[in-house]
Length: 203
Image (cartoon, rainbow, N blue to C red; front, top):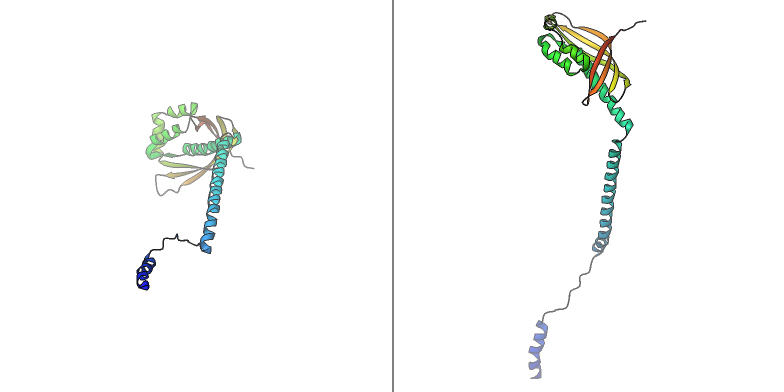
């Protein structure tokens, strides 16, 4: 009888759930990964800081270059050569089929007395340019500045002018000239104030 009364109690004890807290044991790989997390965070901050420093250094270098007198003069010289070259080529180019456009192109690259002289070209001179039936194309093959100030420059240039006749049977001819040009900086652009042909000496 004693055994019969104790059997339900023992069964109840066996059916009670285990409520003890579980313990998770990290494996070796997990432990290494956990130990690396703070280090990866530190490296990320170091990389970010290095990037910011490089950006600031680049900005300071760029902003400081704006105040460099040598750089400013070099840029002024380069612009004078580029625009002076283009102006001389324009002044050595003309198409008999549209003389008015050619004269307007001449005026657009000149200033001062030279521009006034071009604006004063008479109607009979315009007709003469058209009647010649020539297409001239100028190309500067060599150019250099001999003088440069903040608003004036002097350029020498060697120019090849290819002249084609309206008659396709005629072969184009090439003329070679040397010029001395006075340039003036007007509203940020170099314009021709004077253009004179320089005699080519042979020895």
